[in-house]
Length: 374
Ligand code: G3I
Image (cartoon, rainbow, N blue to C red; front, side, top):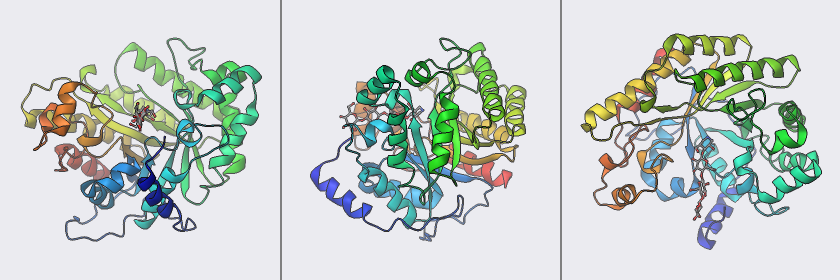
């Protein structure tokens, strides 16, 4: 990941801001602009995924972040391939810029993610695969964990370790598993703990929501994995549930989800909803109906999750439909994003704000669920 020269200068200047101050999760923004509604009481922190070019290029996004969030997750720039595309030449400016912004507005930052096969640079895959060299992973962790010790309190140490279809015993047969065996997760948590004694260390995964054989098997695999990690004495503090909801997958199975959240909490781990958004099934419906369906699904999910005191945070994967990974790069979507006024109906409407930053029913649903839980 690289930025232009002028952007780079801005980011370097931002990165030079002091990094020594840290605030607890959920402590709230100090911003008190006239447009900010009174802060609803919250038990858990609320955050969203961000990219620096969006924060610093879009005042509406910036204001919404300041108004709503007590936590930010770098959507892309903490991933190994963004930090160290070229071996030995780490590039921190983008993350430092997000941290400086978060600090200025008294927000925490979630660390996403240390190990994820999809975003492991080619040189690292090769070294791991051919030499089974854990030193490569240690060096990567040593680049990040001490540097951000005072500014990132929570890390997804391993992202997406579960695969019940092609995996071994429910574990994804990724480059780490192939090189180091299934114990790589314990080892990663221990390596992270050695460098970040105070941080909350997590694993994070998807497709754990619906009533179908795959999601059901994945929930069982997640519970089994957490149990094994705990039994092995691994320093696991929490589990991230991505919660990419999908209206095409039917209703949420309330009783199964209740049981899943309850069992996880019973194992003594924190739970964070890490990447909440909603994929729509039918964009032909009237806007009000579409937005109501999206909000209803999220509210249902959050009410079930937040019934567990173990849920310590809710993070949406973007704040506005303008910046959602769910806008597939189809010509119609591209045209909709470029049009003035912007054609919000052509987009997937699965985030709290519409593309022009009007709050949608989903915004009220998320804030309402959090206020109710508080
Ligand atoms: O910025 C470059 C641009 O310069 C270049 O022209 C373009 C060409 O492909 O790539 C751009 O970078 C892309 C980046 O997003 C920013 O748009 C990367 O290729 C692309 O791989 C990256 O995708 C991100 C993906 O994770 C991989 O890092 C998505 O934005 C991000 O939403 C997605 O997030 C994941 C979570 O980490 C884990 N759970 C699933 C979730 C959705 O896939």
